[in-house]
Amino acid sequence: MKRKRFTQEQIVKTLNEAESGIKVSDLIRRLGICEQTFYRWRSKYGGLQVNEAKRLKELEDENHRLKKLLAETLLDKEMLKDVLSKKW
Image (cartoon, rainbow, N blue to C red; front, side):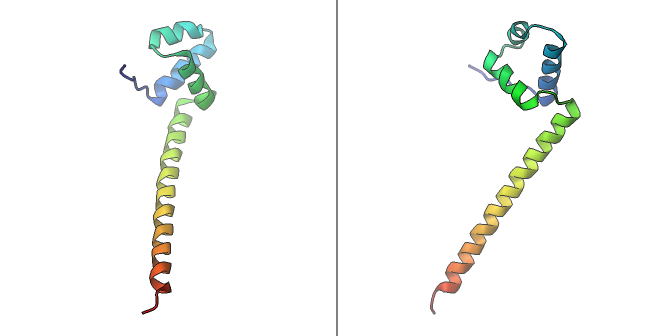
């Protein structure tokens, strides 16, 4: 089954529609998602505005990049320790 990808803007708009009074069952049927997906979205993006959701994504990307940088730095440090600890 093909997975649909929804942008953060679409997710936030959907959650706002649910808060405005549209039934959840109608929303999930219209979007073609399962109920679990809707509630997962609500736990992650509930109460956010579109610009806040974009900022959240940017922070997640930056966090991922920094973790990768840290891991590479730690590997370099371990490699240098191994080289220096060997007797010539």
